[in-house]
Image (cartoon, rainbow, N blue to C red; front, side, top):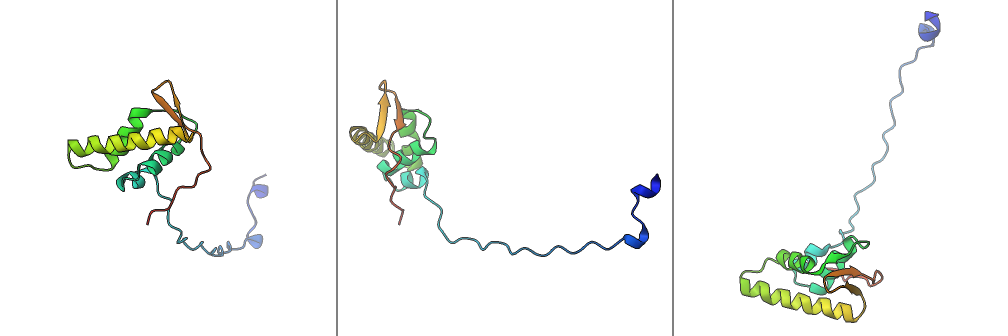
Length: 122
C-alpha cells in the first residue's frame, strides 16, 4: 500500500527549471487624465464630464459635484472659490442645454453623452 504512494527512486527526476517568460515591455502610453487633472487646470466642462463618467450609472448631487471639482482646483481665496463655482455652474448649465447632462428635480445630475471624447491635456 505504501509503495503505491511513493515514487520509486529509479523513476525520480529533478524538476525542470521554468523557462523565463519574457515580461511585457511597459507601455509608454500616457494615462488618461481624470477629473482631478481637468479641475486643477480649471477646465470645468471636461472636469464635469469626466466626474460624471467615472460612475456613469449613478446620479450625483449637483452641488457636491461642483464643490468637489472647485475644491480640486485649489483656489487661493474665498472670492476665487466663489468665482470658480459660478464659472463651473455656467458650464454645467451649458452642458444641460446641450443635453449632455440630465438634471433631475433641480438637485440630481447624470451623464447622458458617453460619445464625446475629452481632449488630452497638454
